[in-house]
Image (cartoon, rainbow, N blue to C red; front, side, top):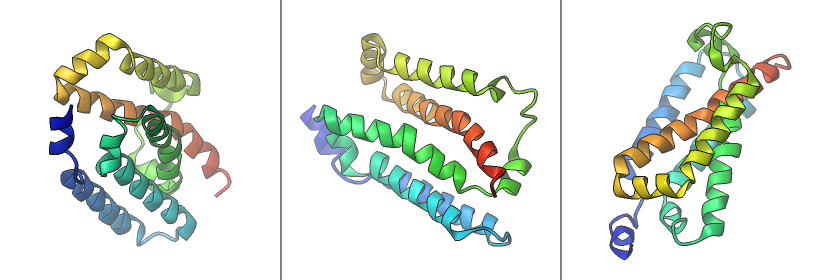
Length: 164
């Protein structure tokens, strides 16, 4: 465990570069739209929180402290997705959206069950053991787990677009 901590004690540079590229892409996409600054601020705060939770040395400390791990997971799955979704312009969502009426995930209940099920599977001892042996699968599952609240949060974005 100590050797893992020694190797990963710094910042996750590839992730930080990817998040910076997302920030630049977001800026390019919204610069032509009249878009409230508070929504852009929410999006950028979501990116900053993602880089702190996933890409900083705090991520490694989460392996040592259960309380810090739970704080990280709460921020990652319950705070960041709404911030990112509320920061995306409605017009951009409509361009990217694939036929939501045909989508199985259109129901908020289905999306919530998907996220809850994946979250449960992630924390089963057998799954955790498998992920500790196979870091690639661990990272892939974490990405899927991170995307699942975005599906749930898509309904939040639809509700909030009425108020915009």
